[in-house]
Image 1 (cartoon, rainbow, N blue to C red):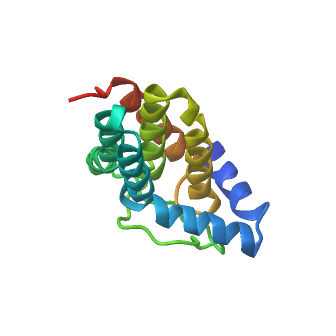
Image 2: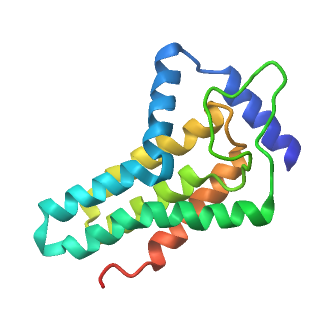
Length: 164
């Protein structure tokens, strides 16, 4: 499995790169740090949709919560970030631990919860997928880190209660 993960990572780091796409991936990564983009979106929806403000507020808080939960898993697993000779990562990270991807965990948790609140929010998954795929594209995570993070995120998004 590790060999396949490494091959896929190398492929993602050497195909489809341009300054524009790399810039978008870096920007998405920064927006996803600490679940910020999801917190801001959820908070805005809580203000705009007073009938479901509690659910949107929970979605807003779920991103940072998922980051914290994810970090606990990282401390248990202790998988180091990938190192590809001649292909340094194109971004920074708050820790040297890789598994699972916190960006994927928080993005899929919140996107899943948001769709539970309002199915019209399915577009949140487009952002979640782009943000998650950007992590191995930038060399920050193995693809399996992202898959595991997405799986954990979806599970979290399905079980979180959406009212106080």
